[in-house]
Structure formats: C-alpha cells, structure tokens
Image 1 (cartoon, rainbow, N blue to C red):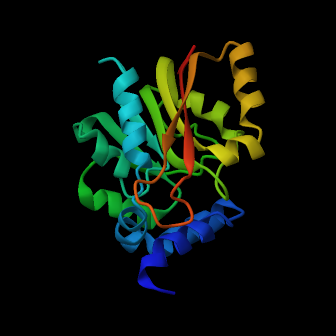
Image 2 (image 1 turned 90 degrees about the vertical axis):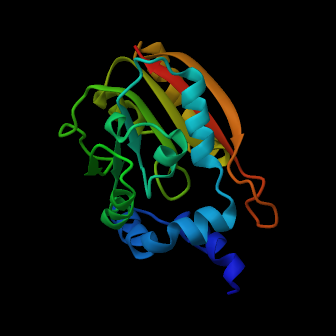
Image 3 (image 1 turned 30 degrees about the vertical axis):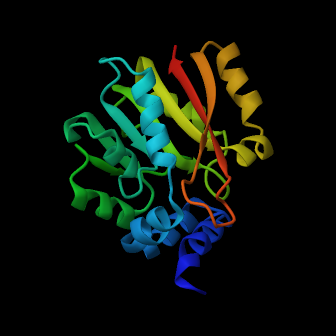
Length: 214
C-alpha cells in the first residue's frame, strides 16, 4: 500500500475492532506512529474541534478535565492548558506511554470505559472525548457510567461519529438521560473530523454532544 494510504488503512482496520481487548492490542501496535501516519497523514481535525467546543462552553470552574480515550494526547495538546488541570485515560498502555512522553497530563490511567470506573476519583469538572465513540469502539452504553467520574454541574464535551450516532441509536439513550434528570443543557453541534482532502473519509462529520451533569 502506498505510504499516503497508511492513515486510512489504520482507520478502517480500527473500525473493524470488536472488543476492548482488540482495541488495546491494536492501538498498542501502532502507538509510536499514530501521530505521523494517522493524525498528520489524514489531517485529523477532531481533537482540535473538541478542544474548541470545550473552550467555548467552559467556565473557570470546569476543571480538572478527564480526557477519555486520550490516545497520544492530541486533545490536551490542542487545549494548551497546564498539565495539572487534565488527566488522560485510555485502554492502550502504549498510547498512554506516548502521551506520558509529551508531559501533557497530571496523571494517566489505563481504563476500559465499558467496565467499572470506581477507581477514578469523581471530582472532574469536565469530561472530553474525541474519537472514542465510533465504529469498532464505544456505543452509547458507557455514557451514563462516565457521569460517575464527574462532580455535579460538570461539563461534558463528547464527540460521536455521525454515522455511528445513527447506527448505534445514541439519540434515545441521550434523551433518556435527560428525562431521568441525569444531564441538562444538552446541545449538539457538528464538526469536520478531517482537514485534508483526497482520502475516503475527508467528508466525515462528528456530532459534538455538549451537556452538564445535573
């Protein structure tokens, strides 16, 4: 495969993953080249879009931040905030190792977001995610579980691949969280996931879910 297609190949293989263990092993294998082959090669604008959405919605109280599915730290890098105000969480030890080398986070946690999050302190003022709610990764089911790591009133900025949002029926899950009084102030905006033309995913769109824990 030509070098210019490396990022697209990585993305489409990631979309075929089935289990948390699959995800951990897959991302471990290419963590060292993730930034160059995928993020730079594809023009991955998604982390910057999540960072901007957070900055537009946040108050000074919406810290510390939990960056879930943090990968190599691209959301934290786009935020340009003190490492003392953000923690990273990912299922891949090697992706966490890549983040650690950049010194972007106060702490890093190996976390399976489909399992219990009881071990993580529940004092976060914001929870952010770029690229974790997509094909082969997370459906809507873990959304409620993630509320447990944040304090009341915390800001959530969660990106979801738009096609995945429809296919996995995110909307009724989100509406249920609203009806049950678990979240409030819901807004949904759109953002392009990629800034480069010329690949099969150039036009992919993310929905950005912005809400607060009630």
